[in-house]
Length: 300
Image (cartoon, rainbow, N blue to C red; front, side, top):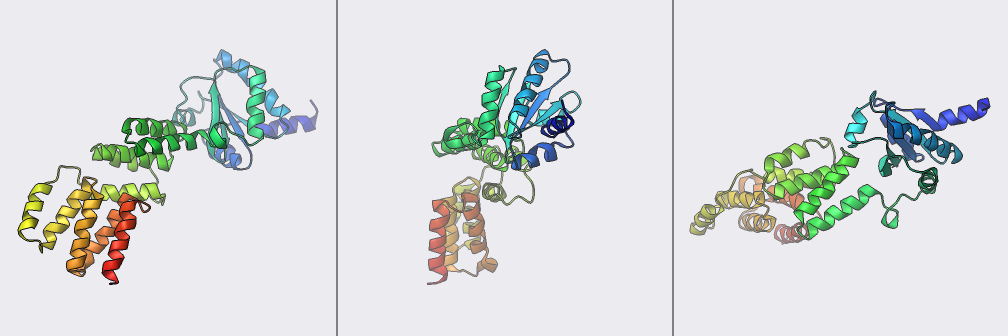
């Protein structure tokens, strides 16, 4: 091997570490695909796969890079990605894992795997990444009321990308819908505090409204029936309904307070409406309809 060939090989293939994973893999994959080979010295199939993988990466002539991580020396990232057996290979594109396999593949399959990455075509429908597909499945499951299917899809995303904000928000929402507020809060707390992802913002608003305990809506409704102008009771009832996920009911009562007295308690009803809209989802029909009704009251 000439000096220039050795230099090129060193640039394409390197030993990785937990401490440098962000730079070597996540950031580098924003420029070109990066393959990560999780291996160990005691692993027989790893010794078979490693040289074959290196040959195919070199044959691709710069289309992809390879980072090899010894899990005995650097177990953190492997654990975060849910690596349970080796060899395990992940391909990263644009900072996200988009493909992968476990075990030693024949060199012909490795060639196909690398060619697909080099051509910019990760597997799946319409070129979408595995994470995108799983998030889509989760959203569809939520839409049809399949809570278990949604939870499973969100959990699979988090195995591939433990910090995925949309999956954290989605899984927390599943628990919140099921009444497990404490678990929902714990999952939401795993997301970055400064994240402005719409799904997470909406979830946090819903958690803010949730009391985590059964509300006495029936008693509040009876009290309000006796005195429809009791804004404090109506406000409490709206919050109780929102905490149970009945955002439409909460909006109705808060709008009624605004209709009767928009300045009540320093415009508390109007301010709480904005939180309810966020919790329901800014693009939800609840939010869109509620904003139209609020505007008609404020600017009538």
